[in-house]
Length: 79
Image (cartoon, rainbow, N blue to C red; front, side, top):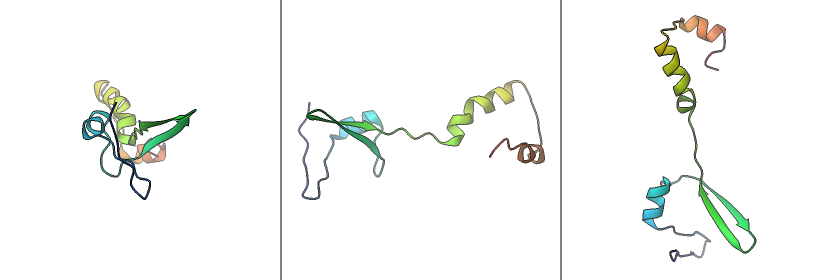
């Protein structure tokens, strides 16, 4: 447990060690939920399309599947 600080604007500071542990960086977003008489703050994990498709791309490389950019666009592989 830690003591935070609430500013006049309603901003709440989180301990640096917690931010680092949870991957909360400057300007990142968090989920905030009121549960009965408590406030729960969760790191909002955002996944890029590159991260989402990393496994698929690795499988394509492993199986040596090839296709041209024209085929990928035609078949909406990357849309």
